[in-house]
Length: 291
Image (tube, rainbow, N blue to C red):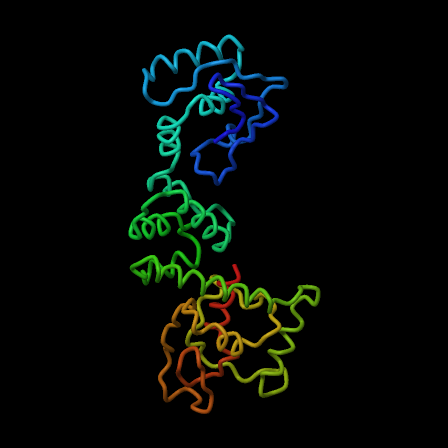
């Protein structure tokens, strides 16, 4: 409650007044949260209301006193709780608590990371009493930006409850952090990645004779030359994040098994035909997580 009551007759000093923080439970606009009292403001003398008398009379007296001072509605908003006591003040504190509907206003903003959105959402849930888990789950799912990789993954395979959803979210966040630590600086213009590609080639850089690319999408949909340079091989990244359950499952290879090299195994496809480090589907999936 805003401080500064010195007696049953008011006595409110602006120096002792500190508006509640955003996380205090008040469902307020930014303008109200950032408002400041006028210099030398002094609360007029008035009886404190404890809930036993006529509330309309108390409000009328308060408004009359404040209008005489020609203060703004924002100042009146912050000053009014200082005129309450006992049961009336307890009632006011209950009305300031948010309800579950307010969670629908917590949405993932453009370019906001999942980690930050999750933090804001969790903070908002703390302001709601007796919040049902199913309501929390629905609100979080609705608040996700539909164009994000995580939103696509959980809508494609819904966890079904908040516990499962938080588990998936935390795994996704951990995987993203792991990938960030393995991004190379672009100062080498991707030469490091190209060098590794040449090293992977059985002909020392000239590349093996190209056969049909089973899992390759049309070139206009995804340019393999524009991959983010990484300082870890795709196979290493797959090994580290495969238990996070955030990589989309690859499509089956389209060519006949008899036409593929049985000596080359891909742990992403769980099939033979190429190595894990040469798997373009895996490289695309990793790139999608970095976006």
